Amino acid sequence: MPVTTSKALDPWPVVRPGDRAHPVGTLQHLLNEHGHDLDVDASFGPLTEAAVRATQRDFDLEVDGVVGPRTWGAIVVTVRRGTRGHAVRGAQAELDTRVDVDLVVDGVFGPRTEAAVREFQTALSAFGVLVDGVVGPVTWRAMVSGMVSH
Image 1 (tube, one colour):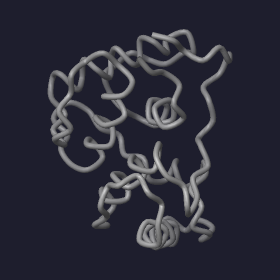
Image 2 (cartoon, rainbow, N blue to C red; image 1 turned 120 degrees about the vertical axis):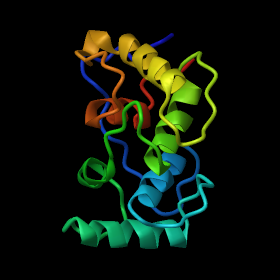
Image 3 (cartoon, rainbow, N blue to C red; image 1 turned 45 degrees about the horizontal axis):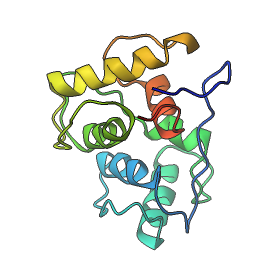
Image 4 (cartoon, helix red, strand yellow; image 1 turned 180 degrees about the vertical axis):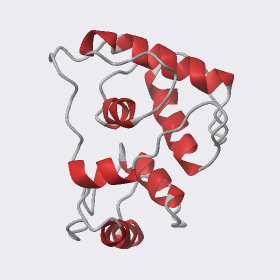
């Protein structure tokens, strides 16, 4: 499993209107976790931009429609075994492209999802990532920045 060669975790990516593909789908899952009803199509169109702006207002952030480190930091939701919902779907979709564990993106954080999280975290242990099976801010950041892929 290749890992980036930098000594630190990659930064949060900047995602803006017009972007397509990774990590826009994950962004859409996380926005849905915060009460929006977006199609997860990995396309940052007008509906995604409106949801980003509304969420930035909700978290008292600069409302610019651009998702940078402050917005990512506000919208990530810690998920662990037993958690259900849109944030779990986002984590599962990320993990499905990053580790060799066959995951169903169903929004249920069960033993297979936990195993995939641990495998992903193990690949990042050289960066000081704790292998705990929990998707918290550090693991989210590593996933959305694209640090590991199989």
